[in-house]
Image (cartoon, rainbow, N blue to C red; front, side):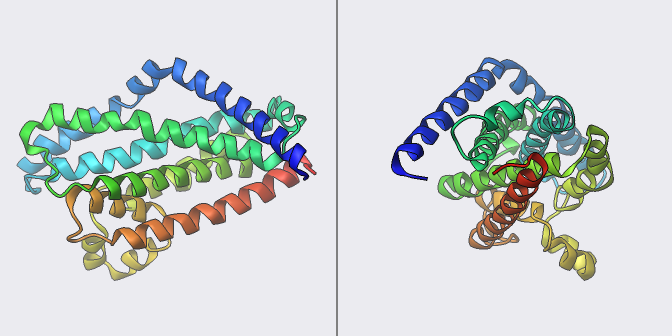
Length: 264
């Protein structure tokens, strides 16, 4: 690729990204509403009901952070359903592949849109938690820099992973089964209800297995940044592992996409 073709590719990439970004912005109200349902129910339940059953009084705060991560993950996953349906059906994405830019730029544009949707609209979860829990929701050890980095990279991983699932699945049914049989359970098992330290103390075997799942680093890293470092993985470990998983799924996604769409 020479300099002139590189400039053309970047311009086309920018146009495609801007088009999808504006479509995303026009649907802002629906994206926000979609991010309210489950967080409201689960924060309410874990903020008031489960403490009455013996859970710590600050468990609602813990779950609020969990809901931020799992909502972002499901937001990216939801977008991948459309791509899975397109790849298995009309393959409208083929039009973008005919434009003067490499196929991996089409995938990169898709990942960035997924990541923006996952990261921006799900921030309302914190507001929901504050409304429901009131003064009991406090983050005295909140690190803006740490949160921005680890949450941003977490959403980038969610986007890349969701892209991989859409390309890997040969049909919408396969994509749905992948969520029901593996991905959905992992979302919850990998740190939603408890920290890694607690799960490891209950079962070292489970604790060791969770080290090979990327979601544990998203949960632990975000809690470190929002609740303080005590009892959680360090930000450096979480960011490093999330980047490694993101790169691995990016490489595998581009390989599968090139093979499936017969890209040059």
